[in-house]
Amino acid sequence: GAVVSQHPSRVICKSGTSVKIECRSLDFQATTMFWYRQFPKQSLMLMATSNEGSKATYEQGVEKDKFLINHASLTLSTLTVTSAHPEDSSFYICSASDRVTEAFFGQGTRLTVV
Amino acid sequence: DAKTTQPNSMESNEEEPVHLPCNHSTISGTDYIHWYRQLPSQGPEYVIHGLTSNVNNRMASLAIAEDRKSSTLILHRATLRDAAVYYCILRDVGGDDKIIFGKGTRLHILP
Image 1: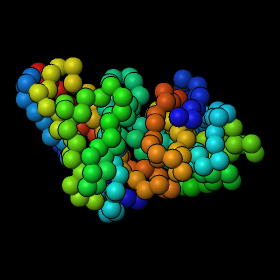
Image 2: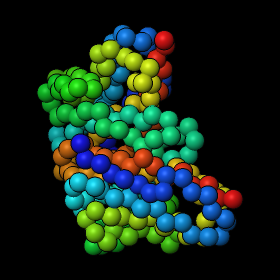
Image 3: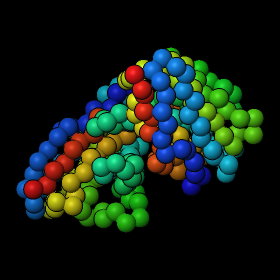
């Protein structure tokens, strides 16, 4: 099946710095990608929908200036956590799919802000 | 969003079949029923999906009620590696196509 690759898998950063997470669809073109975050023992929460060549659509309560999303090509979307703080520590997951078949998920990025 | 209801947790013995239920009484005609599972510290993994007819693949079977208001994911012979959180999700291909996760069912496999 199709593969979605997420990088890095794990990152530790200092409070106040920015972190970029990449999500690549390796063998299909993804016009839409989704970004999620997941806190321990909770379900995945949809943060935003990333559309190739246009602005991302953010879910209610998600700060678009803090979580910058860029979907510059049909195979790459990036999420940048700006001015990260300890409360931003979480598991971030991306997904890509078409409208009918299954969605493919990255392996996730565990962000720790110290 | 159309919603699903699943039991919080279930247990099964290794090498026995497992039936994971899901209720989706507000399902619409354009909603596909998708199942994903998530192992610890990993992204979710696709299991199976269907619209109206029962579906089988190498991982599992999906039984869909005639009125489509419920479905059951069937693992025919559970192994320890099947211990995960299983999510039943409705995906509206006629709408915004978002994949919204509920709380899912945490499946424990007893050796």
